[in-house]
Length: 247
Ligand code: ATP
Image 1 (cartoon, helix red, strand yellow):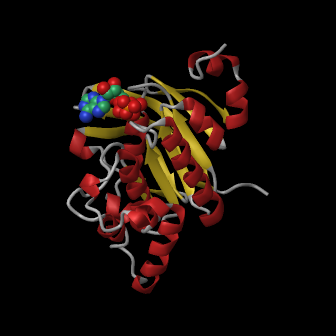
Image 2 (image 1 turned 180 degrees about the vertical axis):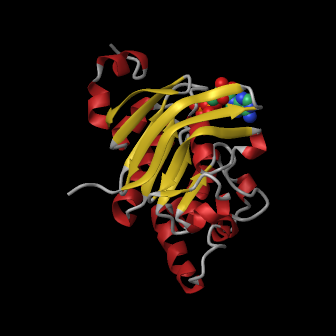
């Protein structure tokens, strides 16, 4: 059967400060149940694309000036981020991980604030701890005193607490040791397979992203220059040469 498209980005243009054109017509499709990777080097426009989707550009003086963004076929461009969360889309932002002064568990619980089924919250906390045993060990610790890896886990765990259909994950590998990166991606894969959560992830680490994603888009200077099934991208000579560091 045909896979349902959850998120559809059609030819969007993004301008910062009224003059700096950063996205020059980006289109992508995120199918339900998949892991889609948004790849490209520093400054290619990955974060901007995610922020355009979750309508977080205003605080950066950025705006979508062309194109459209649809979730389940519905325009979501003018929705505020919390309305998007209610639709099941949540963004895990790069770097900005947890509330430092709250404990790990309090952080996780903040992820459930929009939910009406409060009775389920304890069940989902257990679910998060099953994926992230390390967070359970650290649950009473103040988040600001946990490691970078634990904070990344905490941010993903908090997102899971909102019972999302789709997670927009920005640069999960950033600043983490290779072994930890692998661990985080293994968890993303498990959450995708077992909970059915759809992922759109922005990643500079092409190698790891293409091993876990099903489909990839490569951005260069605000344009999609290549896209395809992850398997094909991994075998593509240009991708190998320019993004995987081998030829
Ligand atoms: P990174 O991995 O560094 O996050 P990226 O692919 O996510 O890279 P973006 O952060 O989306 O790239 O940035 C794309 C371009 O937009 C860059 O040239 C950046 O300098 C520019 N840019 C980002 N934010 C702003 C802003 N608030 N005002 C002006 N220009 C910006």
